[in-house]
Image 1: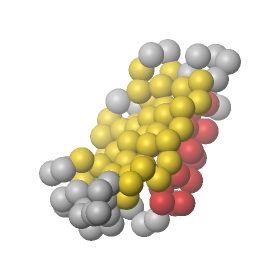
Image 2 (image 1 turned 45 degrees about the vertical axis):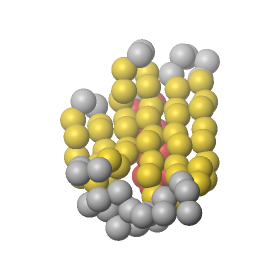
Image 3 (image 1 turned 90 degrees about the horizontal axis):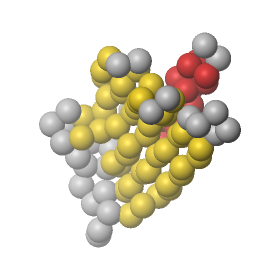
Image 4 (image 1 turned 135 degrees about the vertical axis):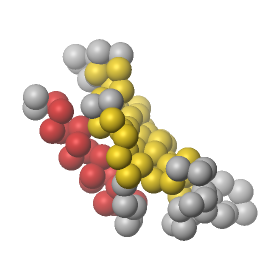
Length: 94
């Protein structure tokens, strides 16, 4: 099985900020994860990453919030998207 793109989104707001994400289903998990998905999600404002969620080989699931990196505990795709959007909304209101 090859990687299958599940979803992809790019949304640019009137203020110039943007949300972009892409999620793939993989034939084998990206080490050290065990869930079998590869994802990249980002919220950009004024040309800078404010929120980012991704997983990469060797690092696993993690998030970038306001210039800092933190571990992220992946449970489901729905929860991933919900968590990402919650962090975006917090920063849109500030």
